[in-house]
Image (cartoon, rainbow, N blue to C red):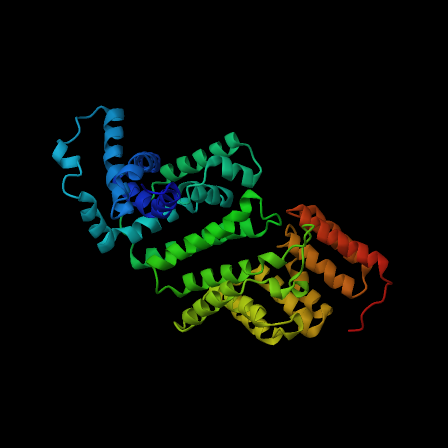
Length: 419
């Protein structure tokens, strides 16, 4: 008798590889997904009685392919199924599939599956929803609850995403090395979007809070099939370092706790140790990219036993390198925090003021600007910036954090800082 919990885990683990292979066979996302679901149903019926196959992924591909062929022929009314000996499992056919998977196709299958979900024609919200539904296998109900929309609205969002992908005509040929590098970059961005969707949640019981764990699982999968990619190592290290702080990021009342005020004894040390080892391995490739640099910045914070031990000079150097590799007003905004630590609020304010037009709709821009103006004693301008930030807050916790800054400012006497 096979444990049902083991079956659930095996099906979830096999999903990306099996669904990717079925997508290559049928070249249609809906058909591939239906075939995989039928294979899963058959597994649930037969594995408890007969025991699991030697290679669950190959078994699911084999059964799903036959089921999909049957379904396609019934819909199109083309011709009868092949002879029984062609489609029946008379000679351990899944072993042959497993050998071919190991030999060549499965890496491109998974990459293609992920690439379809993060197709550039799709808005970020549709990319995340499609990846969580197709690759991770979350139900529409789970995804809808996480995004605070109705099931019907989420179903429509996913359906529109699939239709847009089908219309775009995603190529199924094996990608060239150049195309693979481009796809890896896009997939990494999508995985990090999923991570941030979960990481921003104060309530660990919220549906979306689990997204960060799912993103880490996807990054591990990508690193398993592309073990020599330093940017994938950097991405996984970055997410592990960030998630290691999760127990300390919010108070018991759900209030935001800034990095410098967090109880560092609550940080997850095993995650930190794994991330530091990954980052060291990545940097030995001497091909630094944006995720490696961001992970290196997070690593400096993780190594500091106390906030006052933080090496801000080294962090500033890393942010300057990140600005060269991936110039962005958001990167400059983050460096401004470091500048305020090293050189005071006025220099930081001078750095971010030119970003106002580009970042006017960005919560963190107005929050940081308000904090710098507050330090300079410019309470009226600080209040205006804080009001802008509250209007742009993505959560109640963010809005409450800014309101506390306003309350503190009203309680403190106005005393401009000498610069």
